[in-house]
Length: 72
Image 1 (spheres, one colour):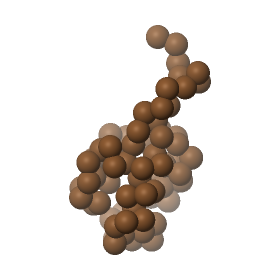
Image 2 (cartoon, helix red, strand yellow):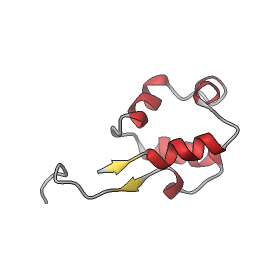
Image 3 (spheres, one colour):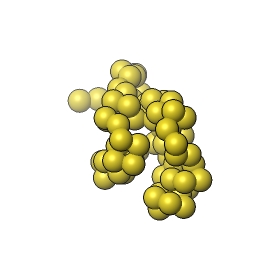
Image 4 (cartoon, one colour):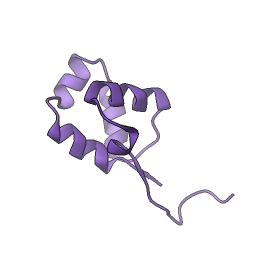
């Protein structure tokens, strides 16, 4: 499972917030909602977040093994 908990910690430490991400950087509320609920987002979105927050991908996502992962 991909977990976006690191994103919220990184966001909290930055000068950005939900409002600036949606108004200044044009991210949709639905994208942030998807992040909040650990739903799929595009790699383009992850790239944009890294650029906006001046961080690395591991500052936004982490992988947690889960029994809910699809079978290979």
